[in-house]
Image (cartoon, rainbow, N blue to C red; front, top):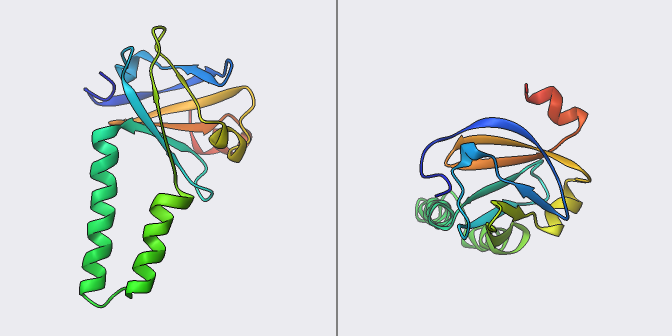
Length: 142
């Protein structure tokens, strides 16, 4: 199952009909349902399991609620962050197919200007997906 063990590795992947073949170091299996997270500020997408997605969103919501209770954040600002979590941030789920490929959301491809290749970087229980361009290559050593 995807992320069952620590995901460690870097691989250049060819985009084919908006799909990528998931590297073996992700431990992905057919029918795993995975979620992409990205927003207009990020320069990469994050691929993770639903359980981790929900844990991450719950942690963010709880942190925001605590800031409101401590007076560090107004309720109006809290609502603005909530809209961000559910509006601007795109969360889209897809199942891994029989060939261990996954469809990359069209919105992510457009926002990151991905045309042919991506760079996949394993990080714990997540897979980070970057556009394969000079900026990315200067930050990541393959």
